[in-house]
Image (cartoon, rainbow, N blue to C red):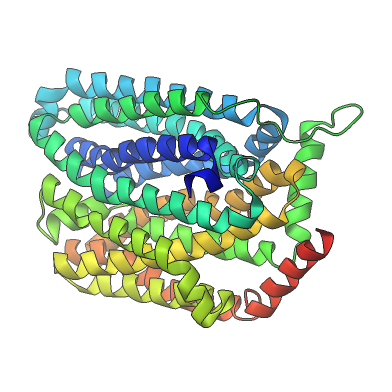
Length: 432
């Protein structure tokens, strides 16, 4: 199998595994750090908003940049930037360790300064992530044959899930028990290793450049946006993904408070809780082709809408950590099925010289809604608490998100069916 994918794929795979371990550590460390600074749901939502806002405001120009430069060099540069930013957060946490261990001793001014620094770092990290991830998703078709893209993506998604949700979060819990700053130092180190591995991938990886004068940024953005918006399959797919991601982020904006106050978990148990994502992701990466073979791509996408919505609703109604773990396993499994189908489809169908721009437009809708979801999630908790009480305020984002998630199925039914997908794939096969 290694010979089939090639050495460069495995370098990219290893870099992804390494950085996703760091992301898994950060998934626990950042909200835990923020919750040590403030217990206000809206302020916690601002931290999540800061990490997602760049997808809304910067993803379109990021696509133009991805199509104009060496994608490998762009990934390396952004990983180095994430290393430096995360290292800064680590030293900031270390310098304020005593106040974070005893939040009641901190003044309102201290809280606002620390929270402002965390939000600023999150904005920088989010911006670097936009460029890095857009380049990473466009680089794979240049490394592996299109015939094995689904398998290559499946291997990548499965490994990322294991490190991001199975290895990283529990490790973060143990690291936090030693020192709140320690997981940030580890996270920074993973970005440095990932940068070195991507740097070792052979050659330049640029998209084909058109002859003649280079178009303006605005022209390039318009071309990528227009291509996706006119496409009968990818436009609704991007809009639906935006709704789903926005709802999930709305539910998770104050998740750390839900875990602490309703489930009664400490940092280590919080990390173990997130291992469900890895289990579901591994099952999904292996089982997605079997699910598609059994019921078809359209029904498989519909399953993600109904099952994901049900998992959110059940999470909002339970007080059992075991049930929450199972619901996250289901959500992760279904999300991986969605990703393996849709990412491979985009990589096969979108022309290479447009891949960066069209992917950035897709993510503008699909990921940009996360920033809105984060803001809404924090606001829902803060605004509803005086009326429904603290407990139901923390449950409400899951319940609202689950209900809208299921309702989205009605919009998707005539637009993401197997016939529409087969028509798109037949067009590409005819061109080949």
